[in-house]
Image (cartoon, rainbow over all chains, first blue to last red):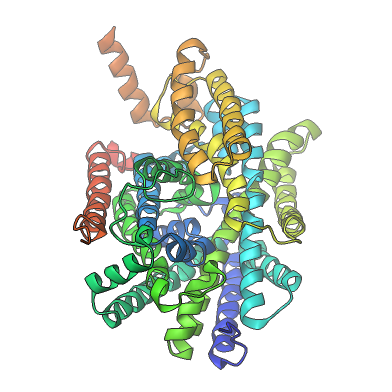
Amino acid sequence: MSFNMSGNPWIYIFIVLFLAALLAIGFIASKKAKSADDYAMARNSYPWFTISFVIMASAASGVSFLGNGGMCYSFGWPVLWYLIGYPFGEWLTISLMGGYGTRLNRMGVRSLSEYGGKRFNSRAIRLMMAVGTMAMLFSLSSQFTSVATLLEIIFELRYVFGLMIAAALVMAYITMGGAHADMMANTMQGTVMVIAAICCMGLFFQKIGEFGGFTAFAQQVYDVNPALAPSTVFTDPNLTKQYANSAMVFFIVTSHCGYAFMPFISLRLAALDKLENMPKTLIFGALIGLICAVGSALPGLVAILDMPDLVRPDWVIPAMFIKNLPDWLAAFLIIGIFCAIISTASGMFLGMAQAIGNDVYRLTLAPKLGHSPEKTESITKIVVRVALLGVAIVGILMVATPPAYLSLFGWIGNGINVSILAPVLIASLLYRKSSNKAVILSVIINVAVYAYLYIGQKWTGIVASGLCTPLGIILVVVLSQFFKDDITDEYLLECGFYSKKEYDKRQKQAMQKA
Amino acid sequence: MYPTWTWYYIAPIFIVVHFVVIGIVVAWKTKSGTFKSEDQDD
């Protein structure tokens, strides 16, 4: 079956509309971003539903519609563990983080590395976290590859041109409007993704009806391969290849607890207009996060019977659209896939450019060079924009030859991020006594463990990260008992980590104990 | 015989767990004052 859509006029109409919308957003956002700080963070600027859409769209990459559908097609019903588990892990962690965005704003930080460095009063931690942020290059490159491969399939466009188009598209609107552009574009893209996911659910139920209902469908899948059927629950012993055993389910949830701390997700909490709106943000986010994760992949399950001879499982969702839906709807849903990819790539882009502009220039080089605050701000703006171009070029070069396994390639970066960033951030928020020495040691151990599992033992990135996230937190807590630091509550109040109320509460508790 | 304890039952249970657990955490955080801005505290 051909995936070529070049004869479908609707795809051109929707692509032109999509590009026009992104460029218009970039232009409007460029007027909104008044300072380097605003460009980086868009603090307290957007309503609750926007934040929900932005976080959902940033977290759900092209993998939602391509990789997850492919997994459903190849591994069958047990993949539902993954589809239910990952939004649960993400939104549970974001809920536990609570007022994290307020802390970022109160501390006036522009990157997670700056936050970590300030909270633990440690330049080494800032540097480690900046390195972790740069590891997102692997994930960003895999997003470029997704766009390029999609364009290759539906327009038979050369892969390299597709890479350039992907990078140029994201750069165009992010360079103009920074975090504001990311927020507005992700709101639009998140909305399209939810509509696309609901359409996928409709297609799934329609097909189930055609196969004679759930029981008849399940029986037919069971006849093809019992391992793919809904009855496969906690029975597969292969930890790293299947999604049907309880350890794997645990790791899916824990790896995505760490994933929620990726800079392109967690920094967006700082853009919420009022802290009182956070409960609505979280509940609505948990709803659309689940709809998008589960809905977008469901057609892969019915394709086991509907398209049994598909050569490339990752293309099962577009293939199902093209085979079963009217031209206009298939074209719209393909745009939904583009939205999923671009929305994740844009946040990664910005996060890495900030790591260079903010952490390397503003916080490290500018003080050494003796630049005044005004000069520092204006140069930071330029450095961030130049860094965006640099990130795009390196990102393209990294995948000039497409990686054999896209999701594994992307998880090199995600895993390093989850190993480095997540334990530090979770410990800093949940355990006051976590010390900077313990954090540094636990990060070093965690990165070594991740490398051993991922490279040495060939564990998948998700499983290795799923182990490293809780391990990192446990390490920080245990090592903090042996390695203390001299950070006081007064310092935490001064740097903005504590609000006055939190500080007073802690003082009161300390007095009561005494 | 096709097994009866299948995803038909487990999937809805986990979807309910998703909302109940996150709902409890959000309610707890709201009650503990985490989602109150500082100017409201005084």
